[in-house]
Length: 135
Image: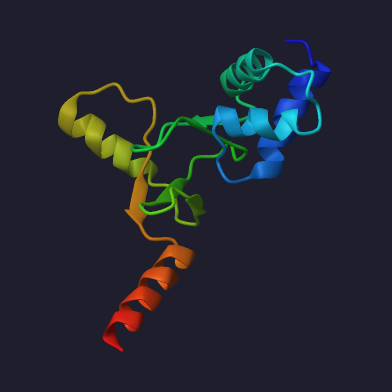
């Protein structure tokens, strides 16, 4: 696969954004400084980069497809209020796949685990709101 300028722009954007951007967010980031790069070019390069393993496509329930600059297996948390997604520093449970395979007979290719709740900012706002009502 050729390493084009556009491909490098897309890879750099995913690495710079670090917040599991959607394809549209990657496009917006690139278009702000390189308006000649088309949306189709960004989408095509995201697909190629994820297929080559340079970035990871993340399908997180309740969210658009997102791209991750971290290629190793890890878990995520998604805020149900603002939609923010963050990486969790938890050990990846390889043995979980073995247990599922043994119990189900499925041929597994991996797993994703996402926790849901409120991020720090949304939790703090909810707390402020609750405190304001008590007064």
